[in-house]
Image 1 (cartoon, helix red, strand yellow):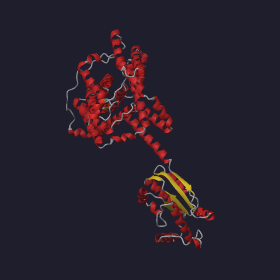
Image 2: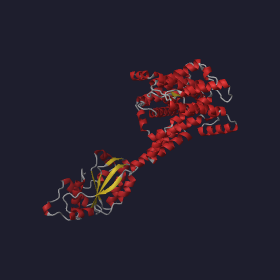
Image 3: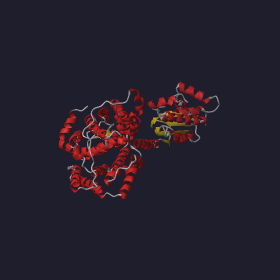
Image 4: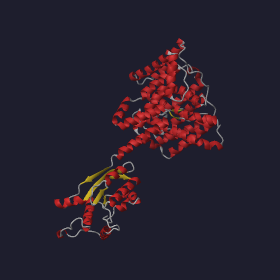
Length: 574
């Protein structure tokens, strides 16, 4: 819930937040209109979402800089819902998704977002920046937006239309606005050059009467009245799967957007659980006013950060300004050239790309570079959800391979102890010790089995397991298989240094019992060597010790186990 800290942050630099909120509102207005139309519910639905959801997410969300509203990724999910269930189906799905978002928030599941690797976030940001830029191509070129749901296809068709009927006025507006923003940001970072550029472009278009500068067009005069028009209870079952998809996308896009905002600033850190809670409340309220499901919007959040926002007051101002514009200034805003707004977003997309971070990530390791590029390409060619899933799967597979490579099986020299050179050499002929380093799990276990099964012809193998970091059921089964193969060759296997947390999984598959042929486990390798030598002496493989050394020390349990081991049913040496 909002607290005193939030209020204190809003009071630190309110003028910067006011200017940032005003800038974001100017950018968000055409996006809200466009996404509302694209969803199938109309422009007023997009405006209702931007105002209602934007305000609630700003107050109750977990990021100081996040700006929420309708997004392009969400409209792709909503279109088939509108086709199957109509407007009431979309409103019901939005309400259900809002309730579903509250569940992981209350369960504190948002923290799992921190496990998303940095290359996935950087690749996602790069891909989104490219998508934002490509989405502006039709308006920047002054042509009608071609049909299609793939941004690359739409941009290519727009370029083809422009080649047939060039509109250099629109290009000049888009390039001019973008240039003013990019150059101005370097010279005077505190000045809101986006507003200046949009105002200049609008004035020039009106004074000069340029035909190629198409304005936004007529806006709706007000927000829809609150409504409770939802589907019947009997249809809720068929809407559960779409609601889960919408909730997952809202959570994913919002948390990634908040992470991107953190990365674009210094000292900002969002609360993932509170962010999910705020998005849940926003998506519960938006359908009551005829709005579509909302998420954190990276484009608007990036504009918010880049224009100097310091607290959640900027996002609140954005929602308030949109509400005021809808009711009072619609005729003025309708005259803003679409090409000018395209220039704002083109500059925003360029500024989202952190060249230094991308270069550092690409130079880190080949795996990081691959994940970054793959996530960016998938974001551009597919969609947000698939891109993140692909990035996570590839990152997980590469990380698993790297961890698996850490598992090693190394032969180590026997501890000399008080043995002489000849005695030590004699022991080394019959006893070999191997140290297992790293994790022994499904990704590394089979390689370990091949190495262990090829042990030279000795009588006793001692496995030093104190450095095994972790072991799973697959690793335990593979180890058991290797021990059984060695036993069939007449080789006794002993284990030393088995940790308590490893004992359970080894015992559950029967591997630990196979490594207790002498009746007990060994805390240290010297203890295992001593009992292994005594075992070989009793088997007649090694000569008995001299009288001066005294008889070997065995517990009664160990002596009984040796007798049993020397007289197996098949007559062989275990």
